[in-house]
Length: 442
Image (cartoon, rainbow, N blue to C red; front, side, top):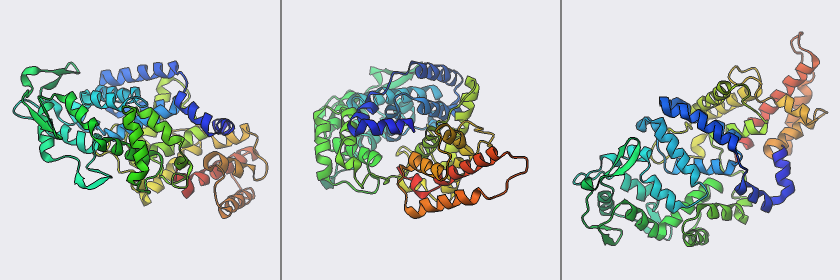
């Protein structure tokens, strides 16, 4: 609540600036290093998501973590095939370093990232036997996209472009976990890629992809769907100024994100409660909203985030294990009868204080008491403001008022004190708010 109040007092301009600035987090970096050291050493793939969720919860730079997740879905790499937790952590740290920086640099570096090299078989690509997996996804999913919005009748690349580009990626392998170029395994002959000829190597292919106008449109369009709307199909005219400025900045992603967040469109009806929350956003939104914590010793903290990570699996988002090279489907794919029920169950587990997995780490009743909002309908207004900025219909608000009044007349176990009964009502009220359809939307 304090974060929301502070942001409102600052206003949009200053609040967005604060998001980009973040705060130094030496303690968080230290904890991350300590936790991931063991994951790397013992190849604990089942602990990857828990470590990252813990970092997301306590990060002093949440926008950086949000965009690290964007890049994780963009360059979707799964440990199901990589089978190396150290490689996956290294890739995650690569995304974080460049989350608000240069897409040009990121695209060059990810081309020789160990996890990516295993995931898309670059390590198998030799002279005379080029593997096309990475060159194909580089063009289709990582840079060009299949079609340019301004020229929808034409493909951005051909199968021949993919085959020629694959020859440029030959010769790379991994030695002691590091990407190494072996010149004797590289095809040094002339290639013809996207209309350019030369004895290209991998870095040249990335440069050629970035030379194409379609790349800026593709990345801008993907960011639009991530931050603004999954339902509104942006026109080429809408994307054009963003794509142009993205190219003119030499693909500085942070400047692009800032321009989107400061645009009128970001505050329009197209963006407001238009996107279905990802499971990560849903769960962390509850924990952070309730000022939850994973208290105790380090192993207990990791246990709490491990249970949260397991819950993410059921909701359809297992971090470090995207379903395919295209990433998660997003949007309406997140919600169906089963996953909505599982969201309700997770909300109950996080708010009841009686679930063994989370205990009292997030207590709605304690939060209401700390903010001194116990009188009458104050708890309803408090939770609606905290989680939905009070933006619900009068009918919904009235039903929540009625629930609170009715619940206060119900009988509870005889051994409960009046305070315990009141706390139970508050926790149930919070759970009802978190199960509202409106809370499923950003």
